[in-house]
Amino acid sequence: MTAPVLFIGDSITDAGRRDDPEGLGHGYVRLVAEGLARRGDRRTIVNRGIGGDRIGDLAARWQQDVMDIAPSVLTVYVGVNDTWRRFDSGLPTSAQHFEAVYRGLLEEARAAFNPRLILVEPFVVPVDESQQEWLDDLAGKRDAVASLATEFHAAFVPLHRILTVAAAHHGAAAIAEDGVHPTPLGAELIAEAWEAAEGAEPAH
Image (cartoon, rainbow, N blue to C red):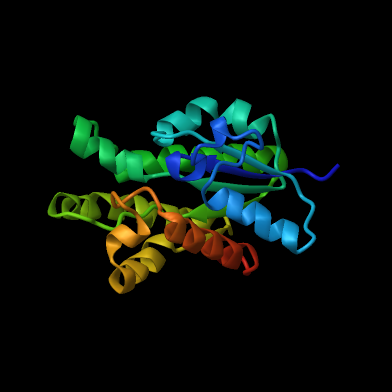
């Protein structure tokens, strides 16, 4: 049996998957699964997103939700809550801490089963002035993900750039109503970006 394609992350990956009998949710993971199925790709898709998760939450469940599954392809998509909690709860996560924990998780997976890695850049498309200040904080996390993609020869999904361009064209709320959680159009753009990265050569 082929090892599954696993997605782990926060609410953007979760997208209601825990209330979905198929366990896929209604977001980009479902769109990816449907796209692969249309192309005759029979790999199993596993969604392990949990809304609200920060990098420390992923670390706490990494053994159960990643290591025990040993996927052939591992997509990690985390970071926006590490920024968001600074502004709504006074719980900052430094870019250095974020990168160090993230690196440790990738090293663990690589040593155990060496999956194909796909790292997704976190994004925010500000829908009001208060979210403008998120951008500087998130930039450090975005840089960390890009750097780790190079370090681990992972595929990199430059999502912040893609969705910022789309927001300039369609309006931010058409991409993510609250600046973070994707609309159906936003989910479609994320799925397309993931598919492009999965088909590309890894970073060097």
